[in-house]
Image 1: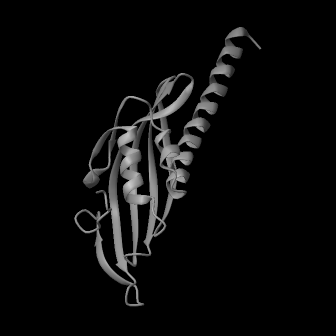
Image 2: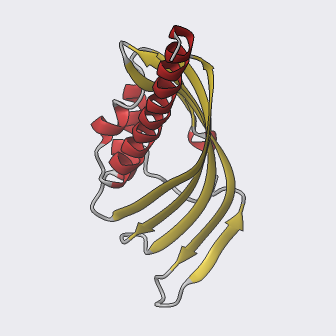
Image 3: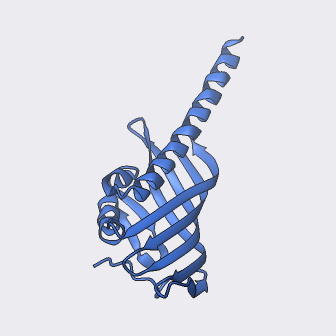
Length: 174
């Protein structure tokens, strides 16, 4: 194999390794959310100024803001979450900068409020390789569908079927 062919092969292998690293990073983030590990989820984001646009939940500019919000809203024994990410479309802008679109199937059971929420969301993410590791530098949530139900009467009743749960579901951020 020529030197040029070997360089191309090394670059293609590196690209495959980078794709897998980005996939594993997103999966680590989603699993940390399900396991109520806000510090592990926080560490998936870059240190310093970032952008996490969570729609009606607000725009966060630092990973510690995200961890604090998640700790307050989602880390309780009565909150049972499932974040299932799929259909990644990952594109490289440079060797150290990538952009991805992910679909999220989110389910939440709140045993205190006796509600079940189903959401579909598109994550618009950007990633950077920093100090040799891929990190999320931007994430925007595009809410696509929402179904919010109550099971308080023993029968599942729809409370909302819309594009998002904005103004209907209280995440207890305070």
